[in-house]
Image (cartoon, rainbow, N blue to C red):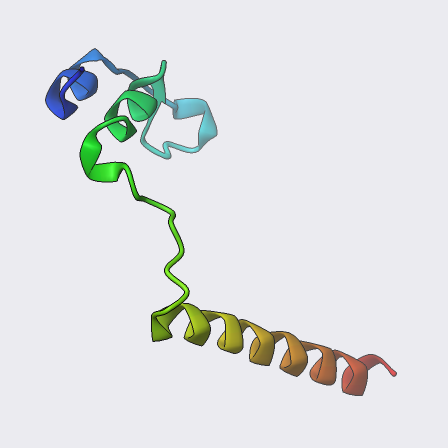
Length: 76
């Protein structure tokens, strides 16, 4: 297994001057190798029993309803 520092050292970073100097864009699969570490095994898993998940879902619904309401008031 590749360690995080080895994966970072293996990544070839090239400056992206043509993109307005946004920094360096990694070439290769170094990010994939870093994410194969056991620390990131449960990354992205949703725990439905926590209040954080429901808070994000409910706040997303509130933003959606408010957007539709304001759009309809402005353009209809």
